[in-house]
Image 1: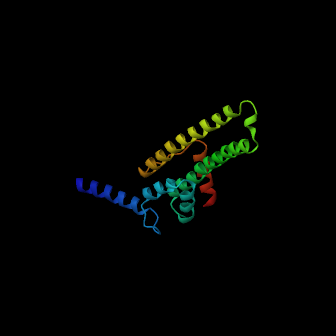
Image 2: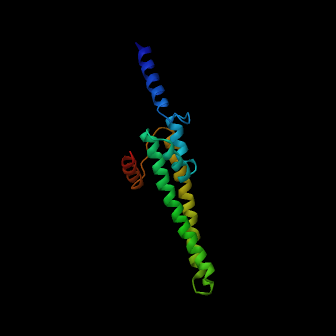
Image 3: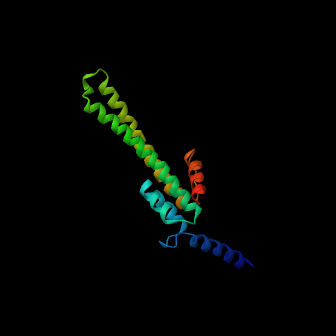
Length: 147
């Protein structure tokens, strides 16, 4: 009797492993982790490669939306930094304070991005569906619209 329980659990685990991407010979949890490895780039890759598995598509879309937004925020702050430097604003009072504030914001954003990146990879590899506030819901809606 106990063998049947173990056998059924083994069969369920085997079925879950087979639900991954067949084209790339990846298990579901491996593909979910890889959606985050290169940020929005790997998310975009898996979004185009996987057409059936909703969990992998969710992780791919969440990766694209999350790290795409973070990339845009980085570019905005870098642009502000360059505009200040190119306009020779260092002659204005408070110039260095403004640059320091921007540098602190960018440093904090790097730190938060790294923590988020590691957390999303770790949890997705465990098979958990971590939905980020706002972006997770938007990613689910976009996945449903695309299918």
